[in-house]
Image (cartoon, rainbow, N blue to C red; front, side, top):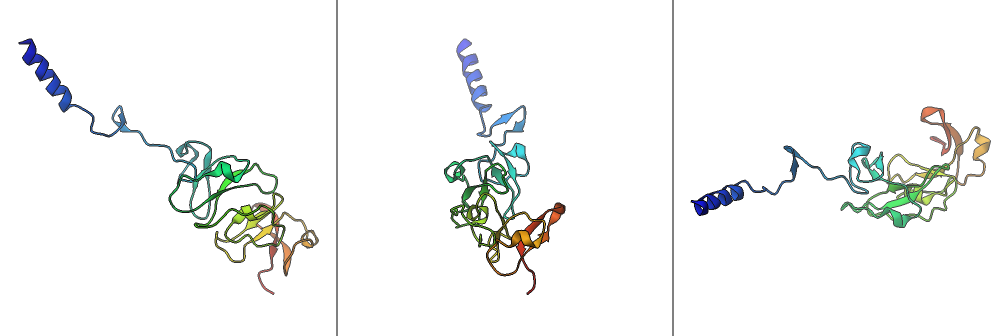
Length: 173
C-alpha cells in the first residue's frame, strides 16, 4: 500500500512539474532590459534609466569612457560615452554601423553619424536624425556674436524649444 501510494504521489508530482515558464503567483517575471536595449520607462532597465532618442528609447547609464557603454543589443548601434553643455556623461546610442567619435569637435563642425561623441564637452550635436548630413556641433548663445567662433558658413544664434538658443546653420542663404 505504501509503495503504490508513493508511486502515485511521484506520478502526480511529475505531472505538476514546471512548464519551463518562470512565474510568481501566476504572473510572468519579465527580464529587465540591458544597456542599449529598448525600454518605455526607467523601471524597464536593469540599470540606469530609459533615454529618449530619435532611433527609439533605450536603456542608458552614467559613464566615464566609451568602454563603459558596451551595448547589449543586436542592432549594430554602438553606444558612446558623451557629455554636452556640462551635463553628466551618459551612454548615447548612435547610428547603426557608426563609430564613436573622438569628442573633439567644436561649434560648426560636422557630427553626422557619431552624434554627441563627435563634439567636445562644451558642445552638443544638433541633428534632425542620427544620419542627418547637416548635423553640426553647437553651443548655447544669446546673440549672433556668440557664434562668431563657430566654423562654417552662416552660423547664427537661433531659438529652440524651451526658450533656449543655440548656434545653428542658417535655414536659407
